[in-house]
Length: 261
Image (cartoon, rainbow, N blue to C red; front, side):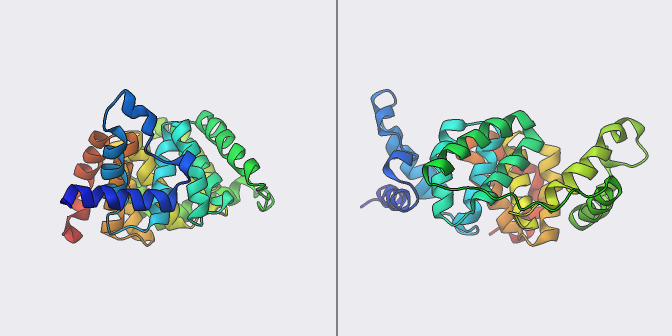
């Protein structure tokens, strides 16, 4: 058996473990149009990307859902959500990934991606409970938002479009602090390190290099290693493209190079 055959076999094994027959990445029917597509998918997507060391399968799925949600790849999302449940992601966690991706790519995305998740949940008899705390005051949201901002970004939370003395960006960024950090990053369902994974993957998929650099560096402040941040970017490559992932890795290279094998 050649090394590539071994990689494909590894991919087929992982595919059988993660995905049900009707939810698999490898669409064999496409081979009639693109010969060898299913084998390439098994080899590259699952045998190579998904099988890399440095990031747990559950975290890889978080990054996959974030990337697919951010660029609204609904059929692929439909195949991955059941696998995410089987990997141990709760329905609430899946919803939070889709909500956070919508904050970055537009809430219209969340309307569409949540509708896909709702179909899967209905098929499995899953009901998501509303366990949100009563609404806090705007002052409380701003206070909580500033706390998350400091914990996540440190001094860099006052730079660029986040500079407090910029009245132009400040017209919008105040809402980002209040509702993004003050509401979203406090919602149950995802730990702060998992939200950092969502941010890195979604911004990579959206080709927002400045945000990838900012959140990739900040992810190191909330429990992610340099290798995990690198792998979060790499995980997006089959879903939102290799060039955006390579651009993101290039932007993060100074911060991540220390632990690069």
